[in-house]
Image (cartoon, rainbow, N blue to C red):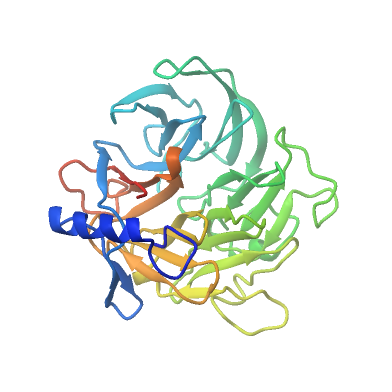
Length: 357
């Protein structure tokens, strides 16, 4: 991961890397696509929080980290020393398979939650009250409901874009063809105002649909120029990193991965699901950072060449669900070894934290 915008590490970063490499065997190595080490210029990773139960999303209220747990439906507040406190248990969550309490986002003093209910996925918002160490949530207001739900392919990532609008990823919920139906909410990226109205400049008049032809997107983020990126689970052949355009058709289920077809927008990168299964993503000043589940690695894609990537932590921490940039530019990564598909070790699940030099 490049922590400065140039092509070479700064002198202070090189000195820090040498000291860390000498002091700790856990210093990170960047691994190229060919599997060869390419750099030691990042600090060691810290296991900051342990004992989480299938955590799914990280969001920040000012400088306070909030984490969702998929199956318990808990929202946790993370203290400065890494201890956890239950803020609330979200009512109406019906966990099962890949569904439950999924994405979190914070906007204008309110916590937005994407959750699976008995027969739908929906987004709610609640006022955040109190101070650090004593946060609480108000009563829920529905932002959007009626999103198809299933045992898998629920999407679930929510985030506010640089335009102040709420973006919501939805999976095809097992109904493949619905991803190509712009009148359906499944297999889409949706765009809404913070209160759930349809923006007048959306690509389909009166519709929250922003892009379509998605199978199961679980990561969205923007760079400093406002370009939007999304990670997406493929089926058997290719997982994807896409650059999202308003009204764009990303091909599922007609195509998977790069198809060179005029009717669809190709991903800028594709990977075998065994090496990827990408979920949450974040963008720093120079890179897109992608947390991978089945691939058990953090992938780094440079913004100045979206066709390239490097890898970190391959097989070291198990399944990775989400990554977020926290206070001071620290990176926060959620492991997901207790989600029913991993092999938990002592202390799982965790928040891994990586600081900057």
